[in-house]
Length: 157
Length: 83
Image (cartoon, rainbow over all chains, first blue to last red; front, side, top):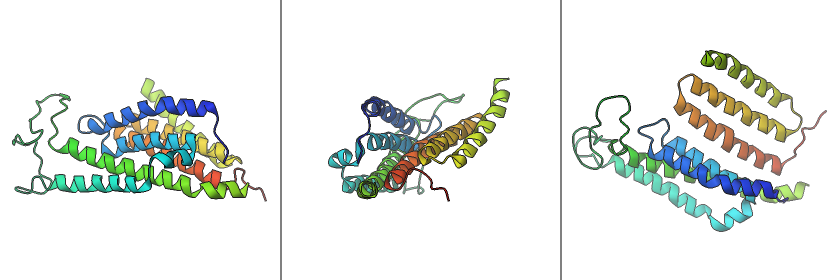
């Protein structure tokens, strides 16, 4: 497998923290600004795919195992479902924004985008769960594809 | 005025990038043209007041699809055979 050049490795190393921070920002502000769990997770997984393309699948597969990603994906799905059961006393997927002061239950003031971070009920936690699941799922797809195509690439050339 | 110009220019560039992606013989160049088409498409979504779809399109279409296609090209051949 041919190595990528030093320019690609350096630029990927510099870009990866910024891409990750931006993706986490999109996940955490999913209830205020455009975006949400899926969009931010896709951005973070794009940064991880950048690393896989730049450094090759061998270097990444030493650090991250597929079983860990599968575990993280299951944690995201279970977190989403168990957060949906929080409001089981009234309804499924109960929004604690309306009245009760349970977790982030503060009614936002009226106006165009008041911008309070802790004003979304359970939705930030649900966005975090969906983001975890999307990051793990998309990164596992890219990583498994890179590992699976590694052996045939050397043979056909 | 700015948005009217963009609403004319961006779809034309999108279609041009798609046509270029079809006519390339080098599949790596076609992949990059497809990523450019996806990025222009996300800009078009943003112009049409759908920033949510624009973020999803830019993340999935321009980044992850390109990575997957690059891995596929690495496993097979780079140049398209002419018959």
